[in-house]
Length: 217
Image (cartoon, rainbow, N blue to C red):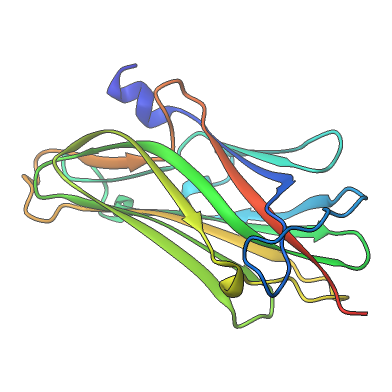
């Protein structure tokens, strides 16, 4: 695929009801996932990486997953890039309904894309996760250094003791904020460096895996 096609390829994000389950005392212990399905509603989609008209939202027929398709999630510097193009972000505000007696947290997330960085340029992919009204935020970032001209892949994983859990018995919107940032550094300012959430086949899955635990009675 040509570089131009790579930069315009779509990103698909999927929040699946598949899980990593556990209990509060043991990181690798497991419990049975809630017997009833979760229901996900998209409250808002905002950001320079998902500007109006460039993102499409679809919820799966069984309401256990959602897909966000992006057509213009691209950060770039140098060449003819606008000064504000060095950083792009997208914030998803979600309403997640879980079965009674359970709570959940995002245990891991897989991201992939493409980057073309000139020698001396740098890039950063970052994601943060938090519940509305909660001071607890889980954030992960992954740096990349030029020269670089290839697909990139990043995985965010959180230890059990550090998971940010949804409050039991209270409905709180869940926010996922992703960001791409590119810096020219010492690279030739006449040459473009970019980073985008895409892949060479024009489709990419970002899977958010849920951890479950039972709420105290």
